[in-house]
Amino acid sequence: MQPRPPQPPPMPPYPPPQVAYPYPPPYYVPPRRDDTRLILIVVVVVIIIAIVVPIVIAAALYVMVSGLIGGPDGGPQMLGMSISLSGSNWTLTVSFVPSGLTPANTFLQILDTSGRTVLAQISWSSLTPGTWAIHRAAYQDGNPGTAEIAAGDALFLDRGTYPAGDVVQVSSATSILWVGTLA
Image 1: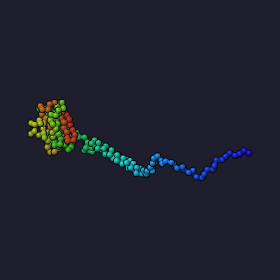
Image 2: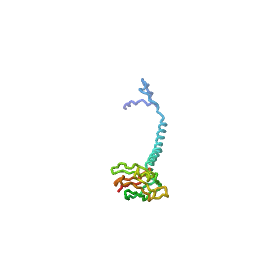
Image 3: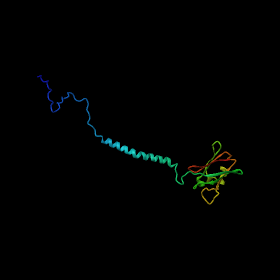
Image 4: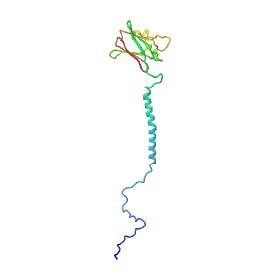
């Protein structure tokens, strides 16, 4: 018979004892931190962004678009006028007008052919026969029973002061209502 090969010693039922490290560890490993505060902050920021940002964008869009959209009375306004020559004056006769325009809140401005102002913006109510010598323009109320400007009202402009080619601009406090060239 052959001799049996040597068997390794049986394994102990517990791990071998750790040998004490002769030196302290090279650095201190801090204990694991509880990150629930950080998670809470991230959740709050995400909720704020999800709610506040769309509200701010919607408000900005409303402000930008609200000037373009109007209700039944807030749409674009236009004034209809015709130009004719009568004697030594130009006659600008109102053919249609939006409601709410009065001589006090409707303005006239005249520019020459090079774009320079010949008559600075002035209200129609200031253009009376008494100021003809100053402005060489007058407003005639064709409907004295109404306070508003109506079809049939007219502006008279001196042909010598405002020759053909000058540009006439009629505006309200907020928009240009009519532009025409004297011809």
